[in-house]
Picture 1: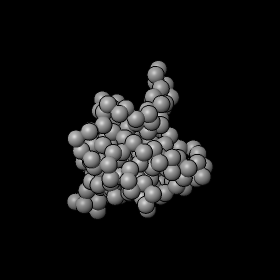
Picture 2: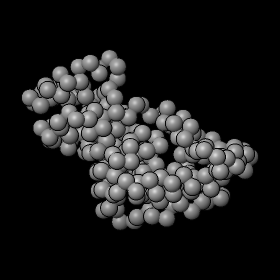
Picture 3: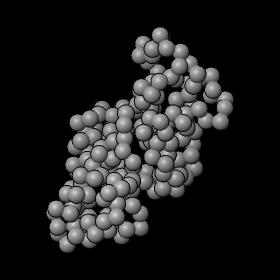
Picture 4: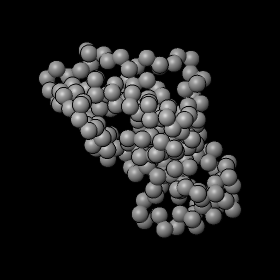
Length: 204
């Protein structure tokens, strides 16, 4: 899955980010639309990895930017606007998850019928499917840390947990992923971190 950079505007638009934000705060809808066009693909990729449903991810993106427009006055510029949008998007995903009639809390169980017996090594699709099967909190932490590069301190703030919980959930996610992936990844489970490179590759 191809995902644009998580918290940066495109190079051509990066230089006038502050100007666009200032104009948007003054009520300039065209300036905000430019920010939307630059950052919506990244926010969509972020929501999709957490929601695992295209339609729901699209809804989350729309609601994220609606809320961002309403809260522009609260944005102090202490982080990149992409990071701020990720926080709003994460809250939207988690809010929808809490109100969902059926919770997907037990997806860590590996469905062996879905594994590919003809390939001894894990592919990016294997990794994506394995991430989707993680328990929700472990998946949230893994996506935020391993794929988007947020620190444990940032993740703790975003999810409302302690840094220790973030670290333990990341460890849990990696352990479950290594156990569920076929071939070489499982064999390398005792090494440094066979998933680190794969997670980065999956985000490119």
